[in-house]
Each structure stands twice: as C-alpha cells, then as structure tokens.
Image 1 (cartoon, helix red, strand yellow):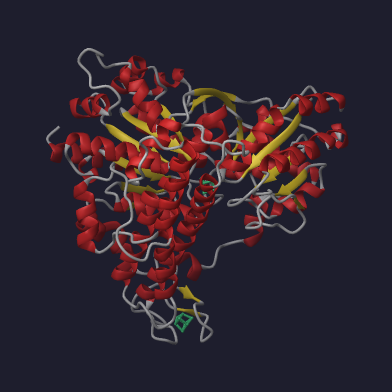
Image 2 (tube, rainbow, N blue to C red):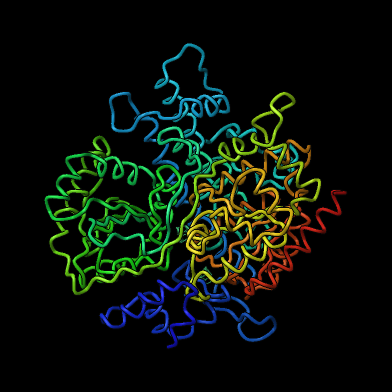
Length: 630
Ligand code: SF4
Ligand code: SF4
C-alpha cells in the first residue's frame, strides 16, 4: 500500500511509517483489510429492521429482487436507512445538549461550574422569555436551563426558536410540516416510523428526517453552544498551534478527545493548578502540555487556545508518537481501537463517560457533583505515567502550524465593529458583512465542516475546497475536523489572506481577520446558523436567498448527516464530498439532489472531486447573486 496517497499531511505520513515499524494497526490498515465495501450497504438497499430479514434488494431498478419480505422497495429501504442515520446523529447532539443544559441547571456560585458570561446569559434568557430584572444570576441560569430542557421533551405547544431564525424560513417549515416539536420526540418519531410496517413512502420519510435534523441545528446544538458559552465563556480570537508537533518532548502530554466541553474545561483548570505543575516537575517533566483532538479540541482551543493535536484520522497517530501520557475521552468519534493500541505504548487510555465505556480502557468516571476533583485525579494519573515513557519509542513530528481560533458570532461582530464609523453605526450587527456581500467585494460565504474519511485522501478534500473558495472571494468559516485540517495547513493565519482573491484579501486586511474563520466544534455549526440567520434578517430576505453554501468534503458520521439535513432545510445548498448510502434508490437521490430545492430553496450536491465542487459552488453562488439582483 503506497502510504503517500493516504494523507496530504506530512506528520500523518511520518506517523503511519512509525506505526508500521512499531507493528501496530491504524484505521487505514483496518479499512484495507475489509477490502471492497458491500455494494448493497453502500447503496443503502439492505434492511435488517426486523427478523423476517435481513433483506437486500437490487440497487438497479427493474433488475433483480425489487422488494424485501414485507414488500418494502428500494425507495422505502433507502429512505428509512437515511432517516435512521439522521436520528442517530441528532441523538448524539441531543444527549450532548442535554448534558450541557443539566450542567447549567446545576451551576452554583460555589460549585465547580459557574456562570462565566452573564451578558450571554441575559441574551439567552430573553429568547427563552425568562425574566431577568432584579433576579439572582443563578436563578436566571436555572430557569434558562429548565426552559431549554423542556424543549427536549416538549409534548404541547411550540418550542423556543432563536430570533435569528428568519420568519420566512419558519413559514416554509410550517407549510412543509417539518417544524420540529421537541428534540427527543423527533428522534423517537423516526425510530417509530422506520419500524417494520410503518412509513413506506420515501418523500414523507425524508421530510421526517429534515424535521429531526432541524431539531438538532436550531434547538439542541444551538442550546449546547449557547449554554456552553454561558458556563465556560464566549470565545474570542486567540492564537494557537496545530498538528502532532504540538506534543512536548519533555512535558506530560495529555490529549483530550471527544466532544463535550465540560471535561476539557475541568482538565484545563486542574492542569493549571500550581501543585499539579510542581508534581509534573518532580517527575522530571518540564510541565504539563494539554492538547486536543476532534471537537473537544475545538471547544478547548476556542476558549483557551489549547493546542490542536489533530483531527479524526490522527487520533491513533497521537498514541503512536509514544509521547502521550494520557488520552482522555468522553463521547463520540472515539475509536474503540485506541484501547488495544495503547497497550503497545505507555499511554493511559482513560474513558470518563458512562455513555461511552470502552473495553480495555481505564475508567475514571466524571463525578457530576465534583467534576474538578475527577479532573485532578486524571491529570495526576497522567503525570505519574510520565516515568513510564519509553524514550526509544518516542518520535514527535516537528511540523506544527500557527493558527488563530475563537471566532464566535460575538467575536465576528466585534471584529466587524472595527470597520464601522462609531458616530454613524450601527454597532454590533452583521451589516458590514451584508454590505460587502451585496457590493460583491465578497462573492459569498461557505461553511466547510465535517470529518475525515479514509475513503478519500486525508485532509485533501478540506484543503483543496477551502483554497479554491477563498481564491474565488468566498469567505470560509470552518468547524469540526475541517477546522483542524485548515489549522494544520496554515489557513487560519492572517498571512493566508495572500491565498485569497482580491476582494476577500481586502476585507481580511480591513477587518484584521484570516480568510478562514474557526467557529468551533460540530455543535457550533449553530453559530453559523446564527450568523447567516442574522444576515438574512438584516437584509430582509430568507437564508435560501443568500449566496451561502455548506460543504462536508470528508464527512463520515451520522451526526454529519443530521447536520447536512438541517443545513439544507435552513436553505443552504450543501456539497457532500463522500457519497452517502442512497444511490440504490433513484427516487431518494432525486429527492435529495433535486426535489428539495422546490421544498426548501436548497438541496444536496454530491461531488467527490473538490476542484469540481468549487466550480459548482462558484456557479451556484453566482446564480443566487443574480436572482437577488446583486
Ligand atoms: S422491515 Fe421489511 S425489508 Fe426490512 S428486514 Fe424486515 S421484512 Fe425485510
Ligand atoms: S467533525 Fe466528524 S469526525 Fe470530527 S469530531 Fe465532528 S463528527 Fe467527529
């Protein structure tokens, strides 16, 4: 196997070489061992929703077996499988959001988790109709948390949508019958309707998937982001570094991996305590070096500038460096393979969430009432493991890149204020962004998001897409593992504006920003919704009128499918760089890539070639601009 083709990232290739020498396997090896994927699964036409089956029908219409034992045809099976992916993804975000809401509910002035951003609390309280006048901050926080939690399981009445949701968009949802009613309810509805003998019509099935996705984007993920900001602080631009080269040669390296910010927040606090630093020095280390992986990294870097060790496909490679004392995880996107891999090195693989125990890991469950105490124990375990490091096995790649992160919506508004005449105003609005888009200085905006996937060359899709877009004066915002790819490639530096087209370059100079803005983790895609919703409201249009697109060049998770659904249902065209398992039903493909446009003013585009995707995006954005008369 020629490893050069596996990744465009040099440190990844170096570490893959080392893994081979060390005789350990990675996800790329396991992918190769699996050989060609099953064609029925890849096309989405196998069903095992009941024990009459499993059934698999022909992915080619008119040829072979057309129906499962119950009579479900390819359209039914594919649409049900697709909807279940959305439910799985939305459920992950739902549980993440719920944990955050419960943490907000339990905040107290003398607890480990406090209210850090009162201004944001007031803003969120207003949208949940929670009274604030003359009230104790913590009473307000608890009421906000309660109101949010009510929307997870709401049975009657309307949920609270944020004011950034344009009226016209909401009307479209109401007319289509896809306005979410309660987050958990939408997940359950899909699990019910995909049961044998329920929904057997692709179109309403996909509409249910959209409704569930919308509950994710505009409810659960939105709340997760808002409530995290309230407790842990709203991000502001901050410098950091990215790639496996951020591991310290003589430091206690702790890699935080997973999703929920509370774990990383507590560990950041614990690792800064003087006693911990002294203990690390006693063990012969220079200090404690915290770095992150996947979305936990994004949360911690946005708020503290914690270094980004890498993205999804690099999680095993961090261990392969031989320099990680502890790999600490909570939930989602954590390879179970890490348990076995860690046995070949001194790394302690520590699981902390009862939602994601992994056999072979060291379990150190976060004590919900005293999370800081658990974090201290974890940091201590990492420090005491430093002496077990086998120097002969250590190889830390030299490569790392500088990056600026921390562009929350609030921070973007702060930056935009820099180009507003304070005597004329208005301040703290998206007007300058709307103005440059209307004027054509910026052709449009794109959110590049999502995972890594060994079906495609690691990071290639992310980087080629982003470079192509900024060259065409399309400003890019990034989240998730796409953001880390951009950070590693140096695209989150202000100097990257040299790669941008003239309009974007000028805007970056005036506003003093990089051409690619890191907006956070996967749940923080709600920040992108907040931003585009605000621009649409300010221009008096709907989101689908704006020259804005979403791209997931290397997506892999069910969460990404849920995200794709809510982005399209919000009126944003979405490009997928990896083909979803829907090709076995021409009807479903037609709904996703064609019909949706009539319903929502936006649709999916499937384009594995990032260069072609950029051309398609530029054309589509030009069309939208023409329609808008700008
Ligand atoms: S639900 Fe229908 S298609 Fe699916 S396994 Fe059962 S019988 Fe087969
Ligand atoms: S972008 Fe994808 S791989 Fe990365 S953390 Fe999010 S869901 Fe997981």
